[in-house]
Length: 313
Image (cartoon, rainbow, N blue to C red; front, side):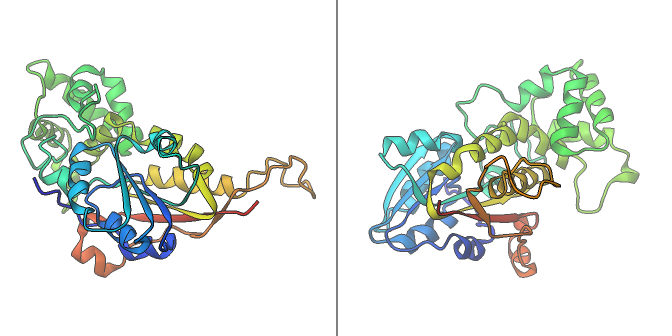
């Protein structure tokens, strides 16, 4: 099966990461290999590319897509939070760059068969890693109304979370909600048609929030950023592509904290805590894709890119 995906902000990613021949790079989300191929091309012939992905389909595709490069390629089937373990296996203490693309791929929506799209009639799964125990089915059919509402509010910022959660609980009393289209229809019925936005399906935020919850996306992002900088060489760069306001907020705040970790009161004339920054933020504001890119790749329209460089201590 072909793994279909168009990389978001490819030129900008390469601009900020500055890969050079001989560099060691980690790509925490291999996906469709668009970013991976550009990095491998830039660091060959003696560079090292380490690609991680929790989706087995992505790893299988990467084995084929990257074999043409002279770069040394190591691929691991696992989540990016496992990066320290994978680097340890390779005896690599630090890298020249780290990329994290948090977006869902076109493959997941169009070809995975796991219910990521409300436009298809597929099993209600939504697992990026099919080895995981919890599916979207488990949440939709197992959580009470309060917990469903909290997921829709927290991860989807859905204003009608209460009505939607109530309608789901009512519907599953008759029969389990087992498919993506079934869920989409139930959500659509819970949202008054007068409030529907042109070009925006009423189930969009619900599907996104369930995917985030199933894959623990925000928790794993926070866990990753806690240690990622430790695995950068001085002068090494980290670049994160986010597609959701909550993700971007986490990246922005963590980068700022690592740049200025001082905990002293703002009115103290001299720092007394002694905490020193380890990063220099390169993108003061999140960089967005160009209008031309969005026309070619509509899935890139919500992309926000943030980059930072590890300081020399």
